[in-house]
Image (tube, rainbow, N blue to C red; front, side):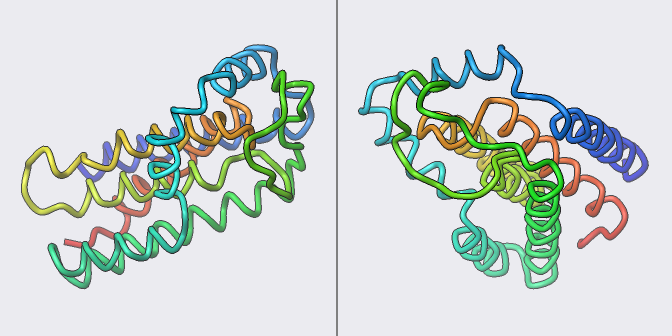
Length: 194
């Protein structure tokens, strides 16, 4: 299991690295712009679901989830989840500085963004943290159950929310999902917490 998990993590990280290299040298693709424009154009009522889900990518919420893991599963798994989230977030911030890809403009979105955020867009650090957290919790959860994967759909909604609010392109959030999941699988395989 650990070998396959490590291989999966390394494949995802390799895919992310290749994507990041291309992203730093090219403009956002037409499919990513089109999908982002479509999601951004959804009605304002979507915010009721998407704004809370987007908070899974917030580092303070990730810290709260780590506290919940400590209470429900144990201290050691919680520290592992926290370490995975911090490594993934750091990798996203470093990649942003290297790729230096701008966030969507009002012209690309077909309207003003719902939120104003400064800094580079690729990859989405919210998506990276959300997917790292969801994957890490799934890895440390001690019993097979649906709860093990409870955060995965929330991470997907967090990624969609970043497009809905107009602060990331579709490929920014997809790359964040790859990075977060890849970091979690790799670290989880190399340094198991249970």
